[in-house]
Image (cartoon, rainbow, N blue to C red):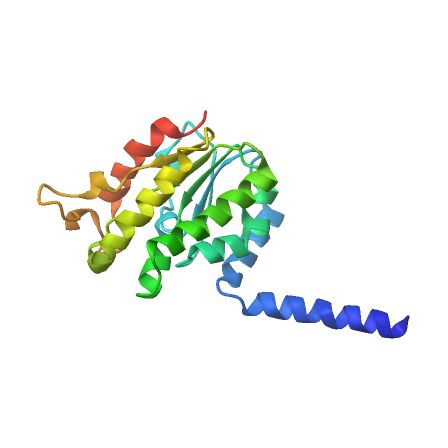
Length: 218
């Protein structure tokens, strides 16, 4: 009996040590701490994904008619969101899930294809369906960042694959922000990005706001 308890204890320590070493765990832990101090709203519209959501700090102000909970974190990729789905998606029982992710997957390596990104998103979408049933899902298209121009063919194809896939789910929507972020020359409008040419400035978020608003549940 003592040996069994000792083994269980070792597994417990190993599990928590591994989590502490996982990418972005500090941010996830901070979310949990926030929730323990100030309980999150019931049935929020959950924004989850990478830094394009994380740095949208006034997202609640952008959508005053809606209750928004922002759980964008780090420079996360789809595997990171999947890793923490039991921490920052399912417990909130959201009435709608809004996802922006996949861009960092593509930029991480020249070997990451559009099909790779699609397979990762499909896994996340399947998990959401298994745990949250028919909750409405919005996927915000991967944006055309000037600093990642060389990856745009992969971005365009990943957006197409995900968009086509979501057409088969009546409770899911692909929201195209990509085209609205291009100038007359067909290139990303640099004036809507910050100096790093990756994250957006208020002009960029204003574009997203106008496009997203009609899709958000009351």
